[in-house]
Image (cartoon, rainbow, N blue to C red; front, side):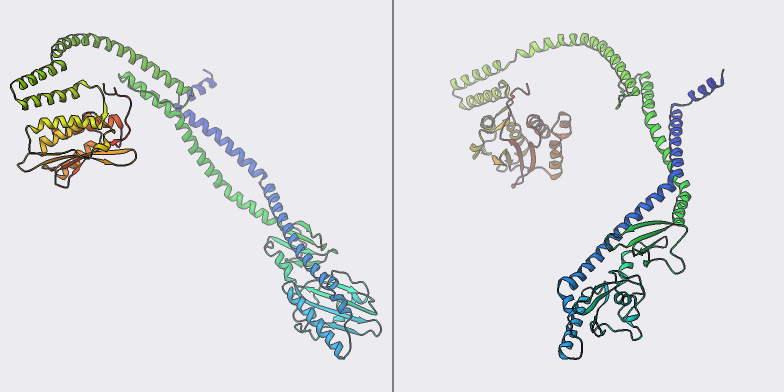
Length: 596
């Protein structure tokens, strides 16, 4: 035998579960290791690209926010100086020691102070320098809240040199120069608005920005692994998050840039390459645990899949063994239409065919036995048919006639009532009658019982509004009969009352109440429990007496006719007897032959 054939036989001789489990595990492991290899191969590049994309979006947003902030400040300064008339007024300020000059200076200082306070979080100082071309005198105007640094000479500062040299630009170069104690930033920029030769005068408005505005713009971005620089158009640094121990030009950094459209500045982000390498290394350290977890999950999933595939086959094998032992009632519950399901359906059909064959043989044998039984029943039926309802009615009529002839009215009345009683019970084939018809039958029964119990008070008043409502035939008479049999056993005065209740738009109730001997609570509870079970025949034996049997029979017929929640419920009457409450629908059914 070849090696390949031997290997195939070794594999195929294994259990079905083993083969499925190994196959799924091998395929899953190949997939897991393939994904791990690709992931490891391209993870560093993917992480680097994702980090750069994230940083680029962040610095673009921060740059846009800063540019909009600078745009708003500059527009406000332009409006203040150029369009509101403040610039013209500042150029016309009187110099000297007169009252008019003092008033002009007071107005200028107040106006500059009000503007500075309006933007105190973004502007540190605002001042205006006015120079007279005729005599070369200069006047520096600023608000009283600004305190000049004594040793600082504004003529030595770059903005002044640019102004006097006629080369002043809107944005100054980044500088550490300050003029007032209120100038808090170590490094910032100025922007200036100048006018030359306006009626023999030159003037310049100088605004010193708060450098904290730049650090706040990038505060959430700057970390030890990501440093931010803001440079002007000449490439000079306006703001930098680099510490003193590290220069701006890091050889191991990844540089990203984002320009500010309005101001012309540029944001440069320096990402430390080593931070990305460290992140990759952290993931690589965790990767073996991740792979181990994935392998464990793969084994668990393989086990579940294998069991789900093998379990139906094992179930079919167990059913086959039961069928071999003679249990032909077993069936395979195939929920799927795969090959195992098709095999199980074939197994079920085979058992059904075998069962049909056995049942046919059994039916043939039973037909032979039933033929013999029917022959005996025919003889018995012939004997029973000799006593038929017509024979019974005719006999009672003869008795009635003889009672009239011999002047015995009580016997006549009893025989007529008894004939009416049996005619209603036997001749009518209706399952459902109107309440007045049922009450007439009960009245007939009460007439018969009156001869024996003349002292019992009967109350049937107040039922006329319910006469047209339906009721199952022979419902009230068994209940009334129970009262005569078990309630009226003493020597005191008794009464029996039948009344109606309007429950709701669809339901009414008939109550049969007596003041008899009553029942204890445990007996009431037990009988109500049997009634709630539906009064089915197998429950009747549990009643323990004929009272229970009669009531359960009535309950069974009502539930068969109308269903739940209709039927009987027993309780204790106010006089200590028993009250039977019968809940019935106001609309009956049309199929009158349901019990025939």
